[in-house]
Length: 476
Image (tube, rainbow, N blue to C red; front, side):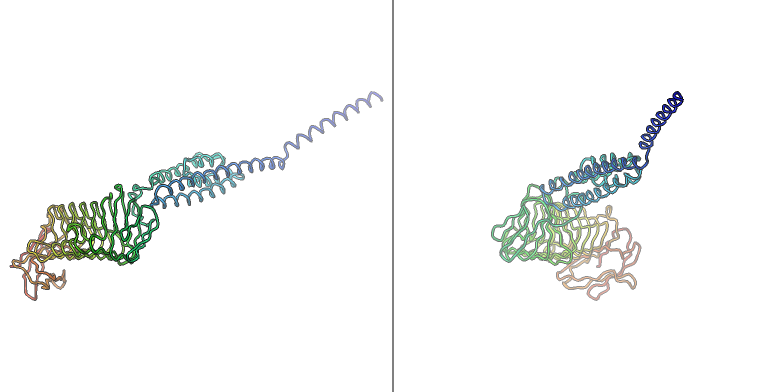
């Protein structure tokens, strides 16, 4: 009995020991306990990813401050704001993705890493952080993060904030302001100074000009930087010189803001070659408003370089030529009306009309004309009509639109109406306040091999059939 009792006691002790071991083992395999440990691990991962994503946002924000300090041109500012919004959005997306990663495997994490592409506004570290936060299929999402690097390239392209951003496109939004007030002015932004009624612009960028300057000048002299003047219902007069004078710039763009009507005029006695608007460098006209330019002393617009018309409505009257360029005149868009005392437009280089709608009226002097150029006169688009004592001969080899010229054998008196019709369709009708001998026209309503009739001053001028692209008909 004692022996059996000892054996039974030994068995009970062994059973107890085995039961205790089984209890510890079941505790280690308890699903709830494993879930709690995983939750702690997931929270830690979320905090780690959120911190890294936050640092990605900060690194994206820092270049904005750097860019803003460089030069407040708007295209740079637009890129910065876009990058900032993308970065903020990317940060939120990454944070959302990381929360989902705790419960899922990588697919939702990948959605988060697409946010990293936005937040990777700097070096893509945020993208790699998102990859470490998202488990599973994150390699391809990490590659998506490289899309954010494309954003970096854009920021790099405009980070200098100087003139490279003006080369990027035509955002054309002002960042500096000049407020004209009779004989004085106020301003906001850098690169501007005022001395009496003379306003100096010394840095590149976009300047909005509004108000009235009774007798003064906008004077531009930069270190070969591009300058844009945004005219907002302004009236600028100079009684003894050019109203806008550019001594040095890489290019000056005069932009009429939408819905505005602007006035520019010179006066008095000054350099006869300067005009109401003068530039030593290329002049560009653009916009969606109207500019009325009066060249009281000489030319309306004079450039020692090129003149380009790319939009807006320009009404120019001048004692001499309305547009006068030492290099070239190119017209691409807009509505242009030129009434010159000598020539409608004149250039020492070539004339190209590629778009827009233009009217050119030449002066009274026999040797002057509606269009004068020493180089080629080419028409590839748009429409125009030119009336004067002469007109540059169109280059038939380079002109690609239909064009007709009506030349009179003798001078016609002022206010004589010239009409050209084709059957029942009127092609054009025009008069001039000056004597004239020729009318040239190009427009979409001209057809090759069509027959046209001419009347002038109520008289029959005969008919002709248009042959090649450029047809010139003489009324005897």
